[in-house]
Amino acid sequence: MENKVLIIDFGSQYTQLIARRVRELNIYSEIFPFNKIPSEINKFGAIIFSGSPYSVRDKNSPRIDLDKITNNTPVLAVCYGAQLLANENGGLVLPSNIREYGRANLDFINNDHFIFDNVNIGSQVWMSHGDTIKKLPDDSTLLASTSDVKNAAFRVNGKDIYGLQFHPEVYHTKDGKKILENFLVKISKLKQDWTPDSFIDKTISHLKSELKSDKVILGLSGGVDSTVAAVLLNKAIGDNLHCIFVNNGLLRKNEFNSVLDQYKHMNLNVKGVDYSSKFYKELKGVIDPELKRKSIGKVFIDVFDSESRKIKDVKWLAQGTIYPDVIESISATGGPSAIIKSHHNVGGLPSYMKLKVVEPLKLLFKDEVRRVGAFLKIDSEILGRHPFPGPGLGIRILGEINLEKVKILQEVDSIFINALKKEGLYDRVWQAGAMLLPIKSVGVMGDERTYERCVVLRAVESTDGMTADWVNLPYKFLQGVSNKIINRVKGVNRVVYDISSKPPATIEWE
Image (cartoon, rainbow, N blue to C red):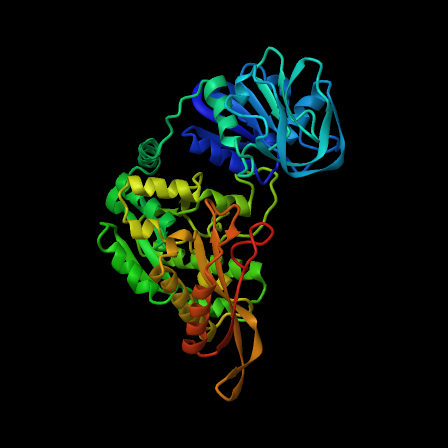
């Protein structure tokens, strides 16, 4: 048995949050879809079943061989997982009479079991299901209830198999992390030894073994993801790593030169190339957000194909892809989760490009990447930089992209970001930026009527980008930024602030 957790994905968007919570406990976890479960189950020290958008009552709902999986390994079944466990073992799962969604409080806890150690009556949990377990299997014990959900938690008698109808992985379940820790540490006896330094050692060793003396090309962005990926690869293969920083014409103001200057002091083999005209040409007339992302992705591939041919015997393309990128494009490991949007750096390479892909960070969340970067002693200015999308301002300009619009948005973004830094608000915000809308509105400047563009300011707080809340920036601050933008950026006469959270909105507008 290895000291790691198998998470079986039944298609829930919360599955990745389970992985993140397990990682926060310094225990390594891997996600596999229900239809691609590893054959060597005994290698895992514990198993967690995820939720699902399906009902166990549906004819085509996800199914697994429970007898095989729950034989000897401790199991925690969440939401759909718990209902599947109950349904397949003689329990009764029916449509709920009331909407079981949102906050609830535990009004009964069976304290004879480790799973609820240090969890008190009244503890808030988060429900999200349309079905409910009306009757538990005969060989099980009730562990917890809420006022509306009697069978909120249960255990299969004589086995370390537990079912929860609520989600311990989400922020709104206040003792969720404690419940997961109880299951993983007290019940499953796993060690909390997965740390940034252990990840670094394992990753560098793996990269050395996989890449050997091969040459690798990596696209740097100036952000934390590509930088951490570069440092890891540099430690593994040294000068065989060739870093390329591409000016796609969609960067922030003065970003091309400032980023290149940052990398001068990091002992990385970095080359800056300007392909902005090529990107603009490809994006001419493109309005649809998905086509925009795909067009930008296509040019990036073309650029790296071209640049790689200038390096003799290069065999790999490295990318700073992280978990949320993968999750929102396809299921994390090929499972049934819904696609939200395409990412320019996810999905492999076209057949004409004779490079293999290496992604040292693809199983890490953003906060984990920062922890690794800090352990690698990467400059705090880079580690603290807000996430910036790979397609850049291309997905912050709604409608067709051209140089005029880019220059307007660069100025707006610069004023906003610099104001956040000046007022000590930058580190309060997980990500901030501006959007240029494809509309004009009437305004008055001096004694003249104007008919100019509208921009949107956006600032959110988050931990991993999977969910986000808008930041309540001070009115006085927003007033000052708005005045400065309208006075200094020609072509803008209206500034608005986005107060929508993710979900239902996304952080970016396209």
